[in-house]
Length: 229
Image 1 (cartoon, rainbow, N blue to C red):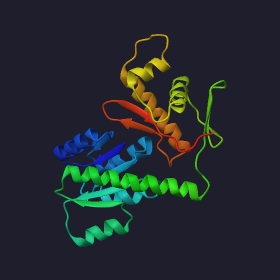
Image 2: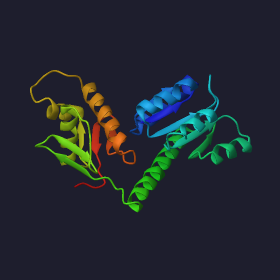
Image 3: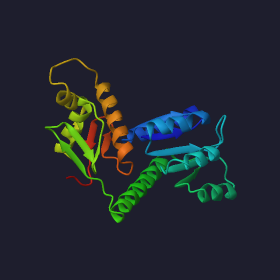
Image 4: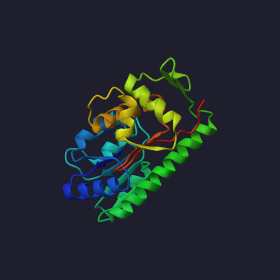
């Protein structure tokens, strides 16, 4: 999930359209005061953070983000002063882009930042011996990550167990619904999205370094696991 923090509605919508077309889920926030609470609840993969926002400055938001999260942040602004760029980068920003910019360039840089971030997280986990191990016990209906039990609902467990059996395969929402609701009940495809969102949150709470469930825009989801036991 990419969080777009931008108070220009037309620009925010263009960014979201390009990101969605590239396979990313995204969400737009225009008010600086709403960012911190949303991030704590939804745990995005990356933030595109405009520095000039109503009600709260982007740099101030960034400083608070860094008190509880190391998620990648791309700073965006119309300011071109070199000092502003240096301030942004010295604070630890993962990238910095000046307006006006090409949406295609922005998407390419988002991909690069995510690639660097995930590569570093994976390497850090390997170097420290903390590569997570996922175990799915279908008889006990229990899933653990490196020994920590995931508090899953029956539907979430069925999803995880199905993904675990078929890593790397893309499943659309109808296929996933058939695996969860074999009794033929009528549910919407957004029910799957809700289950996936909750499953991701629970995995993240135990294992923040790996995003194993990948959204395939316009199709469904794929499960990519680093190591299993």
